[in-house]
Image 1 (cartoon, one colour):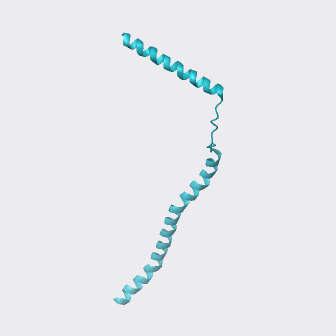
Image 2 (tube, one colour; image 1 turned 60 degrees about the vertical axis):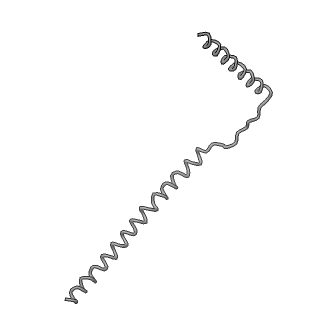
Image 3 (cartoon, helix red, strand yellow; image 1 turned 45 degrees about the horizontal axis):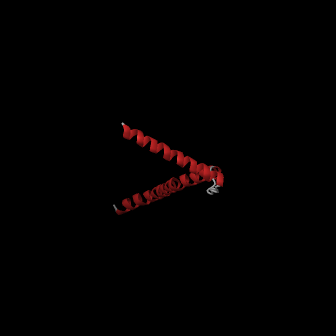
Length: 88
């Protein structure tokens, strides 16, 4: 009986090793292939869509005057609206 069980074990070993190798190959491909594909296709699109991260915020006297006049007109409108709401 021992000889029969040994021959059965020796026949299963190569198929088990093959299954281990195939399983390992599938696992490695499953984990690495998506990363390579994403890296390959996303690297070109990321470089094309980049926006500059620096902004010029230099203001001139004309800009400052315009901003002050806009703030003043908004303030006046708010005052008028508050007076109108109080009258009701």
